[in-house]
Image (cartoon, rainbow, N blue to C red):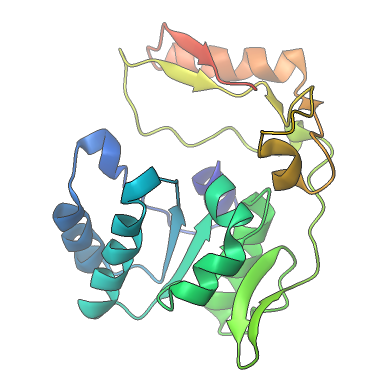
Length: 213
């Protein structure tokens, strides 16, 4: 979804699926350094006791000479933005919560050389510490998002997200905190879900997995 939102806004996007390619951190650092994108947006996940390896990887990317913007997005950086930005100077920004519109606005500011710290939905550092810009409200209608960019090929299974948020509000779950206003379940229209599946079937996909909460 991050890639499709950026592509829809006219940006040239390259997806590096390191886990899917079974790349280790050395290969990932080499690939990022070779491509040297203007911005590196990382869907950061929590690796339990190995989470530090992710930030060591970003530090190595910097040490290899990368000077572009490094931004994180996803559940883990959203919920831990304060600690991440305090402890890891290689990270420039974190998209808080639903990230598509935030990343597009950020990319456009970076591309045009404009100031970016007032983009709604961002956490960042300034001379006084960690700050957050104006809160960005989640999209009310998930049909407004373009279909996700696919880099897998048949016969792999195609994941489908038919809704956003969750129907419940469990105390142990990060979903309510991620959206900032409760579980915020929002369903896509049946017609749009069918259209996405038809498009994928035309590409040769036959197995579909619904990943809704």
